Image (cartoon, rainbow, N blue to C red; front, side, top):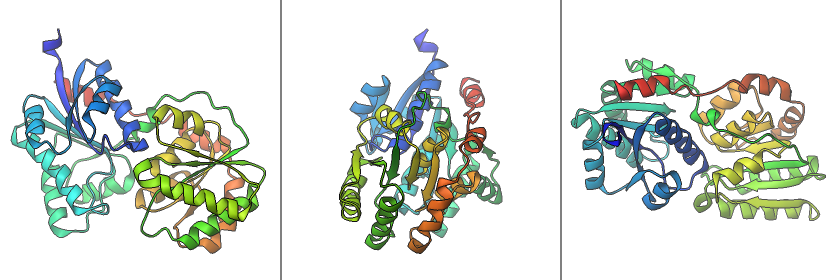
Length: 342
């Protein structure tokens, strides 16, 4: 009976048209619905989220709607992604902590879902984060640094695979293509971008370059500028810009790549899932963690002089090794479903 369904509210960076977060949400909602759990998502675009996933959704900044949704639910799921950190902003950290506090106030179960926790540099932010996490029912993190950090704070946490490893992907058909995925970032200089464009034009002049925007509002302008840099480096080079219009389109396009050079965590993860030779451009510690785990080249955005070395390493990566590491990576939802239902 519908009335007997358990109800979950999901809090995260949803409705902002960010590929990685929307992919996580798709996997999470699909698994909850499969287990007959009613879902309400807190979203910046509740109409779009509700229509796409066929679930209830409330507006990110409608506190009254959020209060009502959490009060009538059984559990709050916070995540995935990197919500509890203050590198993006201290304001966003306190927003996500406040949502968790509401659930705890109403004595609801709280599940921290596959998050990258930290860094939290602000002392007050760190103090509040520790207190809040200690009261959560189940804390799962997606990387070893987050595990070490939370356990250092005295929080019982469990290391899990990122949910996007569980996303269903089409059978790859490799084409003569190189993917470049960029995002706006304060430390990404014009000098570095020109150097990257020159290196791509030099090493991959015979290939078509697909430039990916994973969040158009932030990245599309930069992608267009980089396309211009490539044309300056080699006017004959073939380029295509791929917009973040749908998760399915991006996944399909990435499946055709031979190489991926990417900034965003989930761009690297998706490429690795396909066994694509991948190079990371690190703007955040989560990208460094992922590159270290799979032993792929990783530039820190200030080492343009090392690009020839990184590209040599990229071209000699063992695809079979990558696939051996990634093929069986999945997210196990059984424990989360059990906590919600019992």
